[in-house]
Length: 222
Ligand code: ATP
Image (tube, rainbow, N blue to C red; front, side):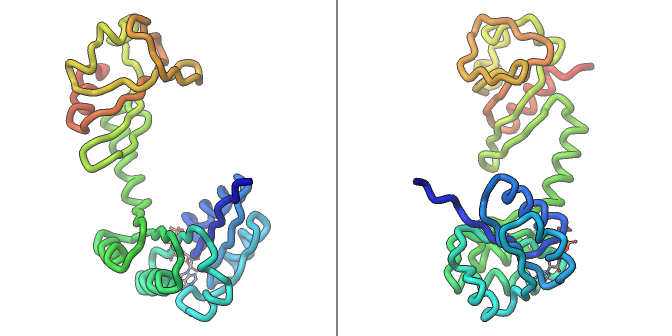
C-alpha cells in the first residue's frame, strides 16, 4: 500500500490555512501550527492536528516531531525574521522538503540561500496572473515550465472556429505544440489534425513565452 504524504503547515493566515484545509479535505494528514491560539482554533475542526507553538522555538518543533513530515509549508509572511529562523531550524532538524512563502524578492533570496526547497510569492504571482488575464483574456491558464517556456490554455477565438489544427499550422507559424483540445470538459490528448475547432474549445499549448504571446495576439478578438 502506498503511504500518503504527511504535511505540516506553519502560520495559519489566509494562505497557510487555505493550504491546510484543502490538503485535509483531500484526505491527507495535516499538522497545523500557529503561535496565535485563536488562529489554531479556527482550523482545528478541519485538520488532523492543530497546535499552538512558536516555530522559532527549536525544542517545540522537535517535540512536535516536525522532521517526520514529508513536506512543511512555512506560511509566515509579515514577520520575516521568524520566517527565516523557522526555515533554518527546520533545515537543521532534517525536514526533507520545505516550502516557504516570501514577502518580497529580498526575503525570497535569503530563503533560497539558507536552503528552502521552494520559495513562493503568492501575492506577486496572483497580481501577475490578474494583470495577464486583463491583457490576454483568451489565456485561461498559464503554467511556467521554465523562465522562457510555458503551457497555456488558449480559448479558441472567432478566427479559429471552423478551422482545423492543420489549417492553423501553429507548429510551423509559432513554433508551439498543441498538446490537447479541451471540449465540453473532456480533454482530447490526441487531437486530430483535420478536425474543425468549435466555439468554446480550449487549446492546451506548449511553447516559448514570446511565441505564445505572438500566437495569442495574432488571434485576439478586435
Ligand atoms: P496571509 O496573507 O496568509 O493572511 P499574513 O501575511 O496576513 O498572512 P502573517 O503575518 O504572514 O499573516 O502570519 C501568518 C500567520 O503566521 C499568523 O497567523 C501568525 O500568527 C503566524 N506566525 C507568525 N510568526 C509565527 C511563529 N514564530 N510561529 C508560529 N506562527 C507564527
